[in-house]
Image (cartoon, rainbow over all chains, first blue to last red; front, side, top):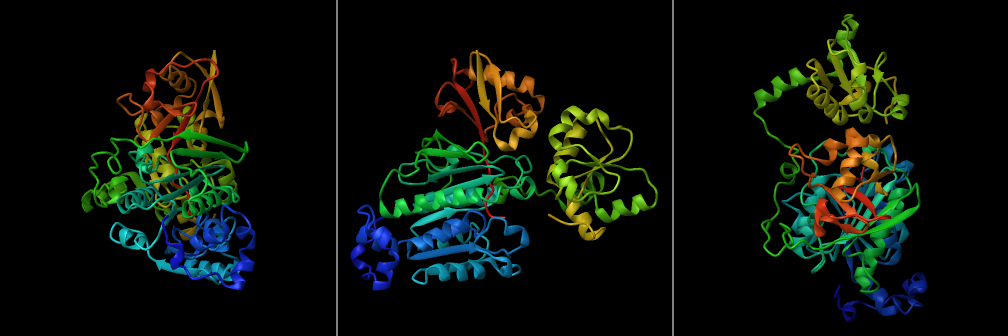
Length: 392
Length: 93
């Protein structure tokens, strides 16, 4: 970062007292603290990663913190998203985050952007900030943040979490690798479960988000060895960090020597989220390969025989289930599918419909013909058919 | 001479929840082939239909990306470990 420290007003007496533990370290000192005050970061997401990152960055005295989010605080967020408390459930995450950050440090400016990051707004949103902190939860936005960082020349303090495992790196610095150098293409939708499906240990984003904040501060101060060209993998169960080497790929479509991506693209399409078949075809295939909670309930009530296959994990099945369903977790299906009578009609379900779509694809690939996916999964069943059961 | 392959969390449902698997072979490709023989369900997650490693699955020999070595032909020696590093998107919700 090359902010001119001279252009920053001196720290007030109150600020000097607040930042005294920084000021007495020569690596930060008065100049460094003023540099932090002159610096800015844009957090994409005020969730699991954004919470600890933004809180520590605010406490450390980063002058301006922007947050992009459009979500509302939900009870299921509170296990890990410390920006938000129980009284905030139902509020916008931005309002809750701003209150929390301002309470931590009123000297920090907090900019909020109630929008979803898109190819249309990303470059404009990034423009006023020095560092981008990626705490998003889906592949299209990951690629969008990466490409926008490369195109605008802003470093990306990257973090990602899944269950007990986290990843962190710094992408898109001058001469350093970007996310696409590591993963040129996204996995097809559904192959990698999301946190909502796979779960996440509540303290894990604390570790990874604070690593992102640490790297952000190092970049702003220009000290230490940033996590550039290194990919950090953290395993909470083993309490072990591993480090892998990353290189800028000269063939990278965005940051390579001859880039082919020179402006932001349609990332939903890039990640295969929008196959866009004609509407008629959608309706037909939905009838053929999908069913709904209401329809399933109607048929069960009419006494029709349907084999209900739940492909979630046993601990999810403990929370809620369709009476009479059979549990075979998706991972066990390849070696257990012969337990299922292929002549009867099968309806597969999971939490929201992603894993069961994979299960139906798999069953069809091994010769089952009467398999349908329950659209919206058990959550839809609880909403529409049996609200007495808990949701998760 | 057995080598260890680290299995990332998203793929552990396919290895009986094991976080690492002992395999043997002389090259990276042979180790991966041994892995998918022991755990059949992994195959479609690692390989495309044409038999090539899927390009969103990164394989590291110790701390080095096999794309910058000799890919699946990279020789391995005793004590080397492989890591499969898939892309993970989680963060906000």
